[in-house]
Length: 194
Image (cartoon, rainbow, N blue to C red):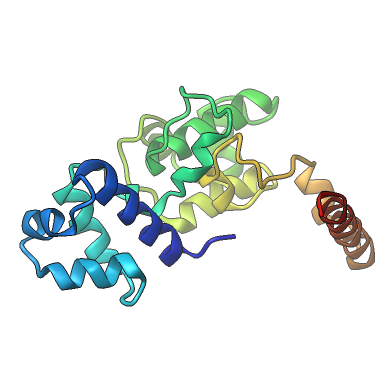
């Protein structure tokens, strides 16, 4: 899995190639910064932090947090109706989870189980609020899941679909067997491709 720094660097280089005709100084001018600084970010010699990421996004007219998303995943047959914006992605995933759940199919039911106010859930579904990590964790826990899962594209090729609540209740020895089997299949597939 790529680190956030690798994702940002790759996105920056793609952005410079596509939107600035491969000329780093054009982005530097738009950001009102030194060209050698943009070059150091592009080469990975300097980390692109959160504040710099937001400045790059503003300078290049990209949505907030655009630089943090691995856009290379979009070459897979992803549903174009699923948004890549983080807030919209969380809203789309939550809506999908609610549709798939008999017991948490409404905002009221989710409120009763999670304790998160119905107004917050409604605003989250409409992407009208910036939701905290703790809120994501609380909402996801109601479904027997983890908060970060609300931020994963539903067709991400690196994810495995399984009953998370039943997996969580397994003893550690059974979880180890599952992990071992997955690693075995991956290693066998690697040998077959050599």
